[in-house]
Image 1 (cartoon, one colour):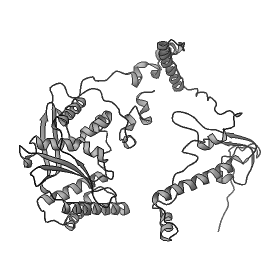
Image 2 (image 1 turned 90 degrees about the horizontal axis):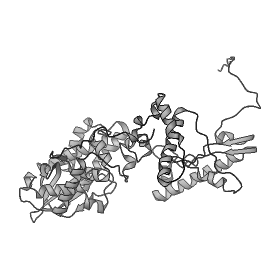
Image 3 (image 1 turned 30 degrees about the vertical axis):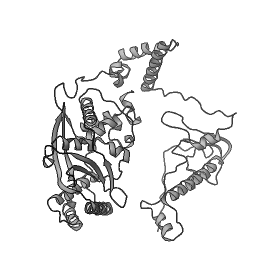
Image 4 (image 1 turned 180 degrees about the horizontal axis):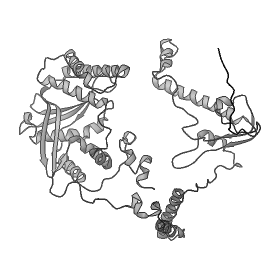
Length: 455
């Protein structure tokens, strides 16, 4: 049973022939207009090649189980992207053919955005204008931004002998005197002096260094600084799981007879206290933990070295560096030399080259040689170190080995990093970890952090 209630409206209505319709391409099929505007033809927006489908990929499972495909995942992904591009191109053709008399296509070309590949295909005709300068908005922030650009251009031009605008600095000065804070150089973040020029560690004061921090400092000094002083997202489920696995497998030092089932029971006991969510996601994480334990136990049974201790803490000094850390597993070879094994539960192992040169393992070896590890004694020798990855997708644990260190080279590396950590200037260095950085919004190299250096 339905009911329609008529009501008046006070909103203005345009005559049927004098209105603008805002539609998706799908809803425009089969219709025509005298004038059509296709706006925002930007790369990443159109064509939109983001994967469609369900969260769990049920459509892919259907294809596999029905026997209609024997493609690898890479072949499937490439085929899917090709099909998506074809669909997007057909939609684009539909949009272009809705106009009876005039068609307008717009795109923005800037530092942050680029025109779509479809746009570049359309404007290839030489007699058609490509881009037009868009006037800045008539707002005070836009005016000040432009004046700052002109002032900077003038400074650059003066140094090269080229004539440039001379009114920008004067106008900025007038605006600042009129009370416009954004026009006053005293409020320009990128030009402000350092709030405190003192070093983090004054001369003569020890510099606290953890083995893992040296690698982080060498990759990006700014990220190391900000994360050390609170710029992290806090402990998440993956970190909690890693801590739990470390504590469980450490029990093998006191109880070598423990089986994989015993370790699994211990995980079940502490699982409710871990912040891993609920439902299917928690079950998936629990299954991952089971796989990690299985890979670790297989490696442990095949390992020919003897286990000396787990979670062995150490501390030693070298010049101003005060190094503190904890070794996951300390093992000894048949020749009486020690090997440090660091257990990793992350999903992405270091490359073989990076693993062989990581400062974390080098400092572990240095601690053994320096006599800082109690169970290794005062005159121990190192036979190398290993990173043991159990959280990646490989069927077996992945090992990254490091040869015995050159004591002089590693000592120099440590002292150089420690001196850098004690300074008052820290360089932002772009690297492969930038896209997952917790402090992107404070980094002048990233678009997210551009406000650090611009108004």
